[in-house]
Length: 351
Image 1 (tube, one colour):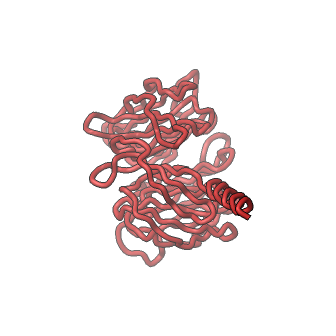
Image 2 (cartoon, rainbow, N blue to C red):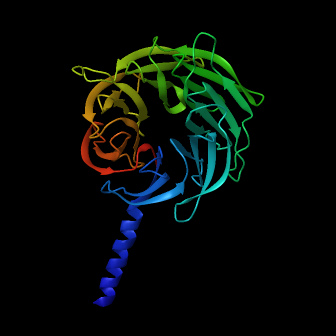
Image 3 (tube, rainbow, N blue to C red):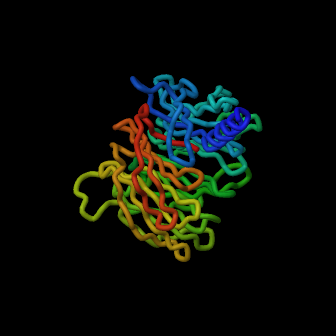
């Protein structure tokens, strides 16, 4: 009887453990935050637990993984300068610093690696530049081999995010209202075209559909999503749609955007309305239909993420210092609020 009970308890322990996956949280540091945090996320219940300080560092406001998830990269702005840091992920999930390099401009706010994991790109909001780095097999960063300045005499640039797509690189510039399209040529990236948004739109983040057929740009300043369609390796505007409820009155500023894994649904965050907007996506023509705006149960949803199994959506509410967890209806794409936990000034969630 005792042996049977022991086996059952061991089985339950293994099952519980296997349900838990790590989630890292980038923060703005201050009174309640010291750096990057690690949580256990239960993929069955949506519960977050076992909060641990993964590493002490200043203002790790955006974080991302290497392709093999053995390293983590974080941008940081501090009194000592603007940097990009590479960390090894240890066996217990905490982080150890590999090296740190200059971000190539003031106010770094985004970092992304290419699919191979041998290049990284940082967007510098304050400086209006983006910087590209070679990444060694060990995960170590070389100093930037290219820094491109988007500023012009009449307009201040605010580079806000960038993504690689094969030999292409796209950069959202909130200050100059365009999505820039660069192509690789003998190891450097040269401008192919700027895809203009509406004047004053403020493109912030974007999602690229599979094979790069469509790009969905969320615009911070006019609370819209702009849809671009690939046409002979260039992109054409096909739709612009509001992220806000029709009855919302007041100021609101978009932040983050994500496609569901099956690409049937698109999600965006509204700071001001303090909501997540849900769009149904037509996979044949790429067009969007708004189907839901739901409260984030907090203030200022800077960033959010979908759990790897697609069953949950988690929102980082910066000003109210909490993470809200939602159940995702995989058939309809709609969200239902589950619960919320207090968290130290969360601004970036990473599975």
